[in-house]
Image 1 (cartoon, helix red, strand yellow):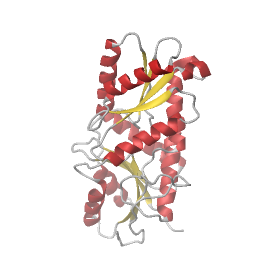
Image 2 (cartoon, one colour; image 1 turned 90 degrees about the vertical axis):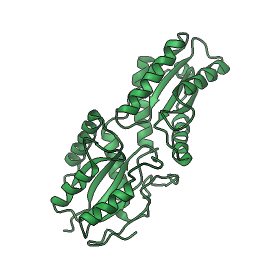
Image 3 (cartoon, one colour; image 1 turned 180 degrees about the vertical axis):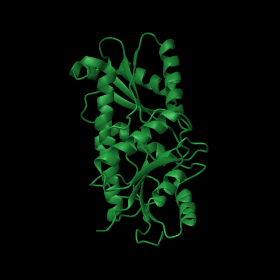
Image 4 (cartoon, one colour; image 1 turned 180 degrees about the horizontal axis):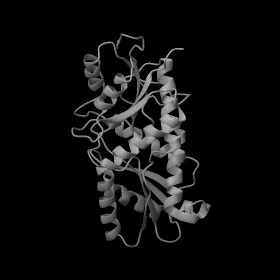
Length: 296
């Protein structure tokens, strides 16, 4: 029987030990659910990560892997980063001659992840979350990391639109932690203005929703900015939702992306402005999965 390609989960840019633990938990979950597929994960994009992607690659090769299906663990494209994923994979091929790889699409905005985000909103709002009148006076601020690349930021805006459709909230606005406008305080201003224009009864109510898979430095900065704004606007109810986390749904989307990548679509190890993919799994740039090759 042919050994399937190993699954390499490529997280982006964290030095946070909690984020590393969350990725380890996701790797364990995938290993338990899919024991036939070798799996490992790590982070690229920043130095001194507690869980480097290079180590994950070396570990898979040490266990006999000759082919990798690489899934970027991103909710949106990163834009330019100091250590981009294609360059890292190219160096891995030089370190391990004969190692082939294919790179699949990042995870978001996938319908399953949008459902998890809705669950995080319900958790933040409590027992009244699903009452239509309560939702109708609630505005959501979806906060992404932010990038210098406008196409990367546009993916966060697209996710906000998809999250808003059919869920009964007054609106879903977007903001970014860094590198892009609006920042979190400006995004909260927009939510407050939207609530005032809607004329909903009672005080304006905003849920700040991180568009992040795991906690870490950017999420901490997000909360500091939101708390400062809330202190200056005591007439507005501001709720904090949690990050997506290493949920079973995330593992399901990773495997969907893995299977699509192995099936052989084309890719670029950046994300998918083309996520209008019918099966939510068209991969981006492809490299040969034939043993001993790494063609672009």
